[in-house]
Image (cartoon, rainbow, N blue to C red; front, side, top):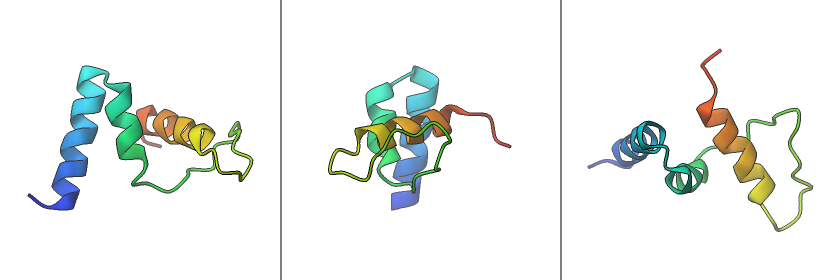
Length: 62
């Protein structure tokens, strides 16, 4: 199985089963979408950035 297939499968599983922990793990593979309300301050704690990524992953495609 290719890396892209694993990520795609994990995304589908996370969304269909509502698995927030899995969605957070997959979010590490994407760049920050720079949401307007991002609280990331550039420090070592990336949890606010993970929050933005997972929120972005749940949004409808624009």
